[in-house]
Length: 422
Image 1 (cartoon, one colour):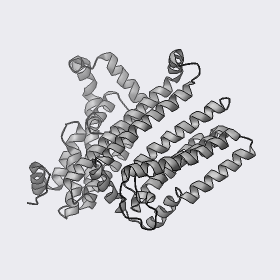
Image 2 (cartoon, one colour):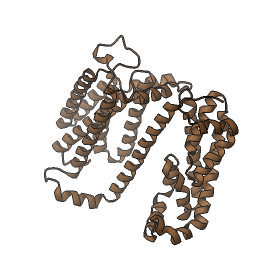
Image 3 (spheres, helix red, strand yellow):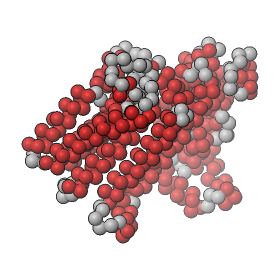
Image 4 (tube, helix red, strand yellow):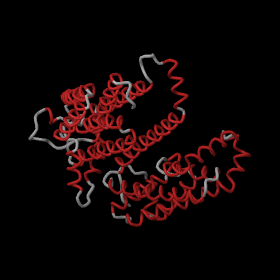
């Protein structure tokens, strides 16, 4: 039997004896609503595919079919008998008629998205199909989003197991951390959705205790600044104590293993978008644009943002002085340091502020500009890791500093030009 450090003996035995059957049953049962470690089984299948014991071309379709079948069984169990059971026994598990009504209302509004997203979160994955059945989500709608989620989830988990085929312990550590991050992102998205729906009531409530000199928009900017500082502090602590090393090595190895025609050219282009010439060029164009419009306040803020960004980059790099993944002999001593990524910092702060200036004049472009800045920042960060110029936490730290500076810049813009729409 193949010995794998860190892998439970039961998992080795399961795949050693039953192979694809173990994979199908494990994924099927978890998606049916039985709390078995189906995701762990799928990751292990991808891992064994890397070892040559299984074939990835069979693992992925097998997991997709098992996930769809399991969820659909769970859906019909919930639809045909789940509601009657809850109405009779729900009080024993904390599900009153009022709470059931609330769940039904939620699924009417957010059912499809919940079905898709729940696929990637262990606790929700077990109950989402049953809940969809109990609340009578239309079966064609359920099937569509369920199948889409199954395809993405099974493919991603199998490939993760395959890519981390040299270290099972590292894979478990990384996936566990990623799961917590995903839960946090989903919780944040739900929070923002609630805040958006209740914004009028919240604005009235905040207006009662906010100082008259601080607007609600400025309060949000201050909150974002505090969040950015908190995240930066945590990331910096992990970098200094080297707790981030397993995460950095795993993600770097995964990103640098990406291969498809033209990938190197794409990464170099993405990297160039955050380079000194690109940022300086964008800053100069923005200054000329605002100067010709007679907007001296924006010119002052853009100039100050550019100077403070470079100064803060230098101070943090000198203080932390982290070694880059690959030495850069052609650079000065300052830029031999890795944390945080100046490219990531600049793409968020500089491009973000320019996008906000444009959006103030063209509100219809607001979402489009947000997506563009987000994509440019993400692609630049991935490129820095792919080209082995930064560790992943360098990029995350750069994003936090950039977000902090962007929030401060927009805050001052609001202070100097409060009459403009934002």
